[in-house]
Amino acid sequence: MRQKVIAGNWKMNNDLNESVLLINEIKEKLVDRDNVKVIIAPPFTSLDRASQLISNSNISLSAQNMCYEDSGAFTGAVSASMLKSVGCEYVILGHSERRTLFGEDNSLINKKIKKAIVSNLIPIFCIGETLEERESGEMKNVIEKQVREGLEGISEHDLSNAILAYEPAWAIGTGKVATPEQAQEVHAFIRNLLKELYSEDLANKTVIQYGGSVKPENAAELIGQLDIDGALVGGACLKAESFAGIVNNA
Ligand code: 13P
Figure (tube, protein in one colour):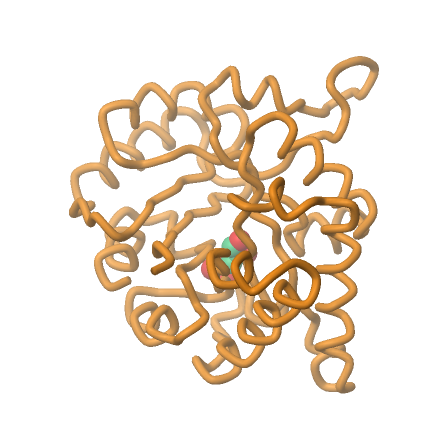
């Protein structure tokens, strides 16, 4: 059975003091659940402190992005080993905001995923279509291309711990959540693609999260779907109560 994984993507929110407050509140409100893994992804500037604060808890740490190079003249970039050195176990890659606002394409994301894997960071690889792509009937082609190109040259062994996250861009930050049926349909499609590209075994064990306007009120029904193994949460993870509510409802 796949474990449920709930991750909070803080995006560009919370300075150091605010991060400390939020983490302490989350720790107070979370009920430990054996079958649910909890991950937080604060901004880079809070990672080191976050890692100290969660060291005595079951919460794991993720970064929101990473460079594909090891070191050198890449102003503003952060490497995998830097993330490891502040306690990150995970890194979110290919988020739709990185794709649309910062021009990241499938081949760049592929390089980052490869670097994360060789660095022993677990990638949370995000894919998803825009509203236009869904309405024009292109959704499955877009998702298939993102998966194929994002995972190109990555072996089944190397992919064995990776997490995928389906986040339809039209549901991110809009309050417009995909229906459980809409989300399940795409999750099943992605899982089938993993089976085609790799094996039934890998497809069956890969965690595929849903992201896009997840809240405590809709989490249980979404995560209750056969192929939905958790949530990548944006807005609702910025309040301890709603983040803990999602974890507790998962
Ligand atoms: P919202 O939960 O705010 O829609 O954001 C989802 C997301 O982008 C998580 O990565």
